[in-house]
Image (cartoon, rainbow, N blue to C red):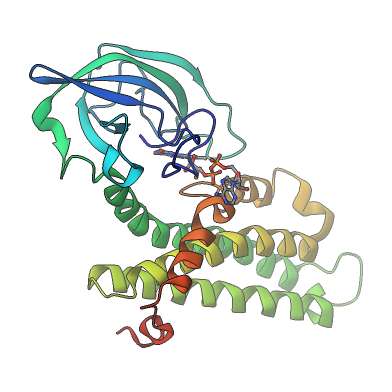
Amino acid sequence: CSSEPGGSANAASPPPGEGVRTTAKREGENWVINGRKKWVSSATGWNREGADLLTVVCRTDPTAPADTAISIIAVEGPVTGLVFERAIDSLGHRAHLVPQFGLKNVAAPHHNLLGQQGAGLALTAAAFTGTAALVGIFGVALMRAAFSFALDFARSEKRGGVHPIIEHQAVGYALADAKTTIEAARYLSWRACHALDTQSPAAEELSVQAKIFGSEAAVRVITDLMRVVGIDSYDHEAPFGRLLQDALALPIFDGGNLGIRRRQLHTMLKSSDYDPLTASGAA
Ligand SMILES: Cc1cc2nc3c(=O)[nH]c(=O)nc-3n(C[C@H](O)[C@H](O)[C@H](O)COP(=O)(O)OP(=O)(O)OC[C@H]3O[C@@H](n4cnc5c(N)ncnc54)[C@H](O)[C@@H]3O)c2cc1C
């Protein structure tokens, strides 16, 4: 549970920025958590009593700088003090529960703090490095489904003409460009996953690149393939609407590409010990 109403791209902001607003105070043997969260997958559970386990990003030191003030506390369900506000009616990912909710005096044993107190931002960043590579794969899957439909359509449909539309150079070139992008996203994402599995020093850079490239490619390639199929792509009988609705989330969830992901790459590039060949040479 990281995201909060009012935005979370600047979780590490110094004052007067709010950064992480949810707080946890030590009271006896417990942490007592107060705040609000938004967009957290399945967090309230379908019964609105909380997921079996929530890992809540919260401020455990009200005055320290963000890199030592934020911690992650595990909260086991059912959660007393979880206040359901609404289930977000999202554009895509329609089977995905993304609620907005409050945490009012939610208690968790003090030993439920994960890792070191104050190291929550680093833990969150590490978790979101792993998920970044997977978002690249989500993009590949959506593009692949759209491509498969468009290729079949182009091979079989003449649209009242003499030849299947794949014989038109414009159609063939558009399909070739789409397929090239899919393979580029696939191999970058695979490479990022491999770097994560082998704990390569290139893992963070490759994962963020896979997230940005795969997510933005998915939105672009699906709309390009809709132009190949033409007007019948706009009918819900074709898969494009569903695929595009899901693809639209990829650049903006799991750390938005503008507010979070490109900033991560920018920070790496500015670092004096950044070596551009680390990502190029990773096994
Ligand atoms: C299906 C789905 C599932 C999700 N699951 C979870 C989950 O399990 N847990 C969870 O915590 N969240 C979850 N989220 C929420 C989501 O991952 C984050 O809230 C989102 O990535 C925050 O990114 P943002 O960049 O839009 O942040 P915001 O803070 O909302 O920023 C909004 C915009 O402001 C601009 N901006 C802000 N700050 C800067 C800056 N410093 N530099 C440049 N531009 C800036 C950017 O244009 C950015 O796009 C989910 C979302 C969806 C759709």
